[in-house]
Image (cartoon, rainbow, N blue to C red; front, side, top):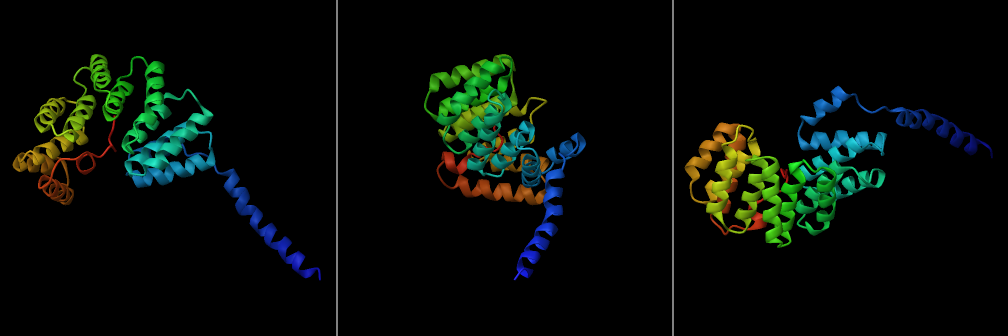
Amino acid sequence: MSRPLLLIAAFAALALPSAALAQDRQPASAETRATYDRMDPLSRSLFWQQESEINPADPVAGVRLAQALRELGQFDQAVQAADKVLVVQPDNAEAMIELGRAHIARGQAFYGIAALEKARDLLPGDWRPWSLLGVAYQQVRREADAQLAWAEGLRLSPDNPSILSNMAMVRLTSGDLPGAEALLRRAAAQPQAGLQVKQNLALVLGLSGNLGEAETILRRELPPQVADQNLAWIRERAAGPVTADGTRTWQSLQ
């Protein structure tokens, strides 16, 4: 009669080492973290999820996880990851910024405005909350507030390509292709303009019917297969009306 109990005890004893190993895992080194920060969103999401499990109170892991999830299009999960950081550190401005980005990305900017406004107050010299507030205000139809936010962002960081790109993509989703193109050309001319700014310019040019220049930009900036995919995507959407859902990805919000 006692044999089953002995077997259960044996299995429990066998399980203890693996449980102990899980508890003994240490966060990755700064060098390893920096390496993963340069990887693709999926790899980063898996890595930072593991780091968050090792130490749920690690704010860096939580913010990085939220960012990677947003870039994967998992916007609700990104909101949850950023919220978890703010439970532990209510004044973590980076988590507030990422929370705002995630809410904007999921089309619910209203719920991110309070966090972005608090981040703005905590980081008075930082252009990022102002840039994101401009997008958020625009999404909830507070046009005057959006323009003021972007103006302040550009005062703090003149000709910042990320702010100009955010402004341009809002113009695009409202159907103002010439306005979007002008802002993106200005953004792309800046030395610090990144790949996303140039891709956004190619998108607007393609939707405006200037597929030749769009293709030139994409083939200069992207591997051939990726450029082909982008061009096919642009051609498909150039045949229809410009809509917010059909043209804008919020993965690169700055």
